[in-house]
Image (cartoon, rainbow, N blue to C red):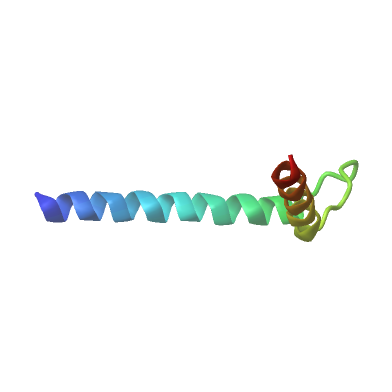
Length: 57
């Protein structure tokens, strides 16, 4: 029974990972031309600035 539960959880994780990979690939191929291109580093910078601001209060 434990083996079946482990197999089901692994299958579920594999399916979610596959969905995320396909979703990202589709997002790269069919990019919305109206949306501005943002680098992931900009989000990290904004989060860091917000955490510094909250830390001062």
